[in-house]
Image (cartoon, rainbow, N blue to C red; front, side, top):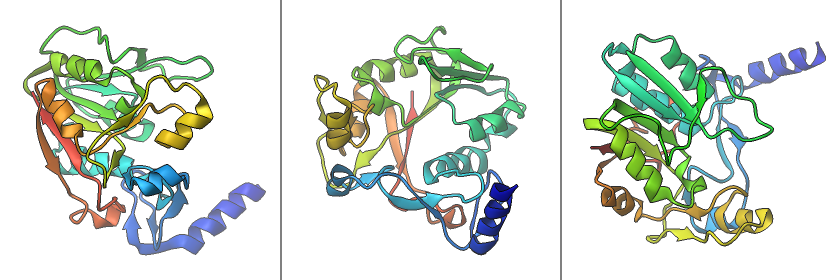
Length: 248
């Protein structure tokens, strides 16, 4: 009871008209501070990481989740397409719930199950480097902040490319350095503290540089960098975060 009252007071104190969360409908005057304040994230100006005002006080959605909503639901209107087949890797629960209630033809969720974690019944145990679907199957693949966890990231990119239909698209977001051209990675480092120091998170193996597009193109993708932050300022998007919209 005490926690509910405290939460209600918090929501009232932050309510306003500057921002709107498309997931829960909460309107606020500011955003919740989230993320970790790490030197490497500051030095490399990592977009999609670091300490920042980006959270919804009510449902705790973050800027990168709301970016997916803005692009997929508002811009592309994917949920209106009854002929669409979608693959969603490591699905975000809030966005996933929207797709599950939509009229899309097929919505497949996959994640590499890890001991100690619980997964919803609609999520399949799936390795993005070995996707159990035939070539040219999906119209759209969503893989949001996953590739930075995978040493063989180009192998995962190739698999995502393989299972897309010709002309199909993939939305492949990663944390990316604003001021470094070259991707910084080292797969020999397994110490959790050292990984956090070098890559900003204990389970990351790299920080992508601006050469990320080159990696995507190397497996056959045609890449468009799109920024919709100004159009959806109400959603509290990161003005520096581009969408990597890849076509087969």
